Image 1 (cartoon, rainbow, N blue to C red):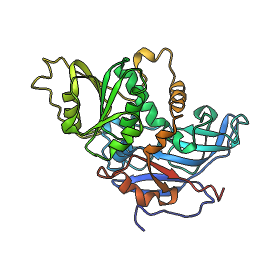
Image 2: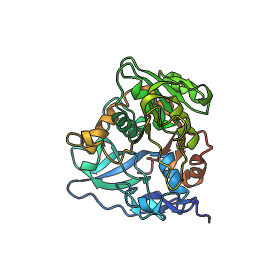
Image 3: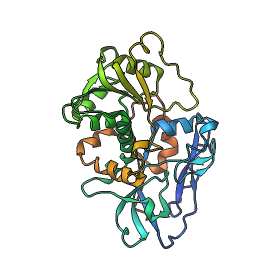
Image 4: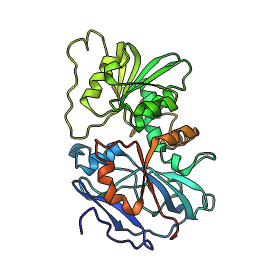
Length: 337
């Protein structure tokens, strides 16, 4: 048996995906307690794979300094391995809180087909949003947080370097601000059709726009960061959304960086910007992110679907940096419940 092999196909018992070593993962049977007052039992319908974060975990690239800050809300185990990790789960409440039984809810739970958690940790999915699309809520939170950090204004020319899920969602929201002109820059020309469907422009790096009022960088590559700085207009900000884990990154801060008075601004979804913390909770932000998923065009971001039982076999390809994957949806079998 290889480490990427399913331990058991017994669907009568809850199972979860564990990262057990560098580039090794497997399904393991886990315990699932009966819900107590204030808790619910959830049967998972779909979960989403965070290619950036989970890719770093899979490859063992989470630096020791971040082992505590990187913990997911319902993570089991400790970094580097073994860990049960994930934060984009959509399921149906099967038992527990009568106000939630039968409802479709989003939670920040790992890849697991059945689990119990506090009712307060579930956010009902609004009417009109499919369970599949609701999986994008965690990515939409990241995009929303970045817009708060970047502070765009109506009429701005905005560039997003990196056409992954988070970059495309960031561009999608920015493009809904009145008068903005938004361009996604990516090395993959196949992103052009998706950008067009979202109502935003597309460019390859060599033809990327200049003199932008605001730039977001999401490509997690030094070359992308260099492109982002090139796109920025004098005196403007580049919002760095990429997280590089243990990778050291060189940034072109010589030449005209200082004389152009460019600003490199960090953005991280783990915290709400200071100026919003007195009014915004994490729950309010997540609820808002879900409401921003009303548009069916966002279904275009779901590029791959994989059965939960096959996840250990397919995850290495899905997390490969060279794979042409946007949002990968894990599909859970409900027939045995």
